[in-house]
Length: 496
Image 1 (cartoon, rainbow, N blue to C red):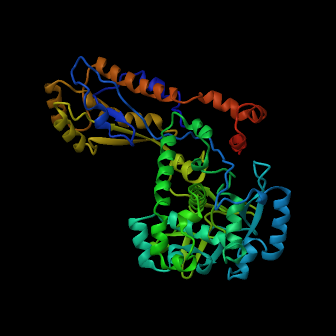
Image 2: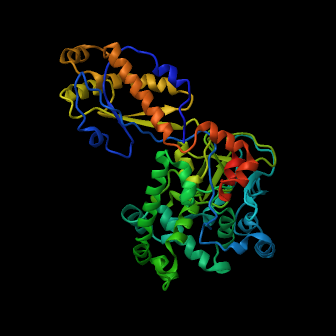
Image 3: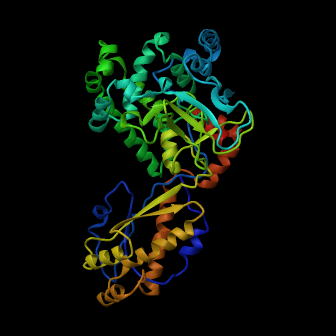
């Protein structure tokens, strides 16, 4: 949902020096198949088919009203839920108190509350500094006995590697385990942790959910963006994993012995599994320098209680017998503590965690271009492209704030595709560097097609950027007119 800035237009209105014709397509489509039948001649300039993986830099998110981990009951919310929660807190204490009872050493964090955007949902928790922290301080160290990994779930490292290599993802196995554990209710050792995940509803620090849980109407807000297709493809992938759950249950000895009569697809509907999958996806930690059976971990006090930030370098790290967090910046007492979410563009952050980061240095559009294989000079052009460290199908990254530089980087490759005269091609082959002399007319045609592409892409969105901005600033109107109730967090997030 990213819109190219207006400063791009003057650039495309200029005639810059050098060569050619190439074709663009979405990374999810084979570009050569889309354009293989287009003719190549000096008189015919084929239309481009360009698409990229965009994300708007604004914090555009949504929430669904569906439950997350294992179809948590609505009675957990509202006054009745508050009464039940108080009784349970008296019995178990909060998550941190439960962890201390089970081996968590003294730490420098505390759980704080933040109101939910939806009044029907209870406030969410977040981890904050309990005292002043300096760079390099250990905020907390969670013992392995309080960390959920596949090694624990499946009871055998070899089986864990086999299943996740050939059958299911780590996320599916972890989700299945927590679903079974939730069925045990208060008898489960993990009950306080599961209760906390249910309270969060997979919403993370901004109290919104991954678009995997959005309704069809809410997904329409992504119309025009390849992100919508990615959401639908991921949902289909989750469906395929659901269909493999019974195999995992039989192969995993620990699961089979512990829950002998609860066949997964009979015990849990697909919707429940999808909610659990998304909840696990939103809080799983990728540990480094550990065995495959331990690389994906659920760490109490970790995400979603910790905030994700793209410009943060603090990471949850596996040490001897524990997972610890060393802060990368100073914190005052009461400040929310953040960890790094990896070098992910906003499209991935939205899909995985339900948020986008306006200060994300890794946010980018991926523009993929391909030389036409039916061009009589295709092999020569391919050779020239390789000589200049380009591929016959080349991806270009367009970073926010550096759009002009990205287009300038693309132009030599685009010009190469426009070369049609054999003598000009020989000149290109013998030249040094990415220089392709084309006529001003061809140069203008190339730039106009690039500009036309951006215009057509923007036209695919149901609203303009200015209309979105206006809607986001009008909270009253968004609550009372056509904005779905579950999209209300979108309005609030724009103010953060």
